[in-house]
Amino acid sequence: MPTPDVSRLSNTLADGMTIYQQVVYTTQDLASGFIERIPYFVAALIVLGIFWLLSLLFKKVVHKFLGARVRHQNLVKVFQRVGGALILFIGFMIAMVVAIPGFTPAKLIGALGIGSVAIGFAFKDIFQNLLSGILLLLSEPFRIGDQIISGDYEGTVEDIKIRATTIRTYDGRQVVIPNSDLYTSALTVNTAYKQRRLQVAVGIGYEDDIETAKSKILAALGKAATVSTHQAPSVIATGFGDSSIDLMVRWFIDDGTQAHKVASIHEVMVQIKNALDEAGINIPFPIRTLDLGDPSVKSIVKKLNEQHAVDVNQSAE
Image (cartoon, rainbow, N blue to C red):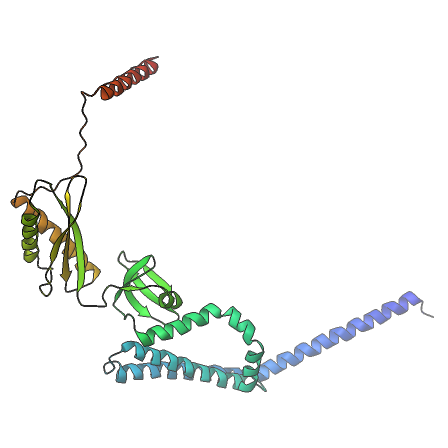
């Protein structure tokens, strides 16, 4: 007659064998089921590939027929990207139906409905950028090739996507800005208009005549090739500086890009400097005069000499 310990051991071994057999049978069922579904998985991948090619073809057809005919190119981009994404989504749904038994779009929609709140919180920023991107593409505050300023970044717009906008800074760096930042924050478009006004400050001496200096500066602007002839430049006295009469020189350029702006400022400053030098008009700079005959200055010089002598003696020791 078996003892109680032997009986418990045999029962434990029997339970272990039963669990092992269940694991083996389950693994075999999964493996056989997976092997049976391999043709369906391959078919699903083929479906995805076909719809991916259809998405690319759709974008090319839209660009070919609407790219050169539609004035607002951003609308073409919206149509391309939204249409391409819709085609890919349809292909994904069909592939899921082919690959997974019993899958229907209604079940996916139901699952999304159950987790919509969690998904909304998790993807809040992504959805905000997507919506902002669509609104930017539709409203067109700027286009590809425009030069903009957004926050601490300034550069040329290279691409406008639904999620983010890519700009190239003037020192050759690429910056990706979320569309929600561009849509909700202040934005400066330097090339929105054909003409752009520039200005530079010029100082003349108190002994010089303001009107004479003004006429010389305007004549110098007339010689500058980058200054627009469609709007007249101006020279305005703006204040009494510490060592000069402050003038503000303003003019327009016909090309508002950064490269033309920098070139125009350089040319105008050279022309103004040459014109004022030829007219004998002084461009002053701050000067400080030290009166060594003043008693207070003498005492300071004496203390400095004494300190210097002490330093020399210490270094000699």
